[in-house]
Image (cartoon, rainbow, N blue to C red; front, side, top):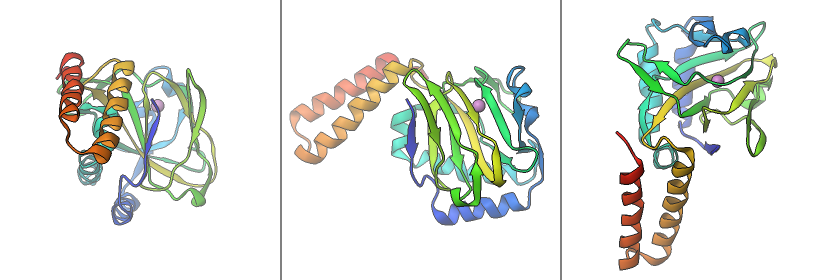
Length: 227
Ligand code: NI
């Protein structure tokens, strides 16, 4: 499932993140790519030991944690700490690849299975040309280029790429999430059910049937979810 979440970060948070990133040093993005991906990856990232990284991560993770749409669409179990990247000049693209399935946690404490990938756009689309995130799945090819502060989530199993940036710079943040529900179809069913429950609750209030249907949602999540 490909889903966008508008304005995950408020404007003042985007400004704060961008101000922090203006003071950070960019290094080659090859450090976190797998064997296949590294051959097509040509961008820059904030190094893992950069002093500003914990504060940047705290801002993004806090925004994810307060978003009900992120929770119900992704059902997050574990999130690899977000990384920040830049496409500009000679480091301007990331060719077609699939994200590694197992992502090492930077503190060495283990691995997170990447079920869902997410990109948080941090540049105004008017400030650069190109740089679309292109995602191919069984429903075809999708080009995504969102306002600063908006997020797209998509299956880590999809082939995707970032088109060359031909003007300006594209700053972004990316992360990988292990879901409480491993199976994408089950996750989709739960999302659809939750959205319809939300709509019905607004129309009807908490009727006895709503209580039972909400129970069905949670009992499916209990059946399919693992912590
Ligand atoms: Ni990727």
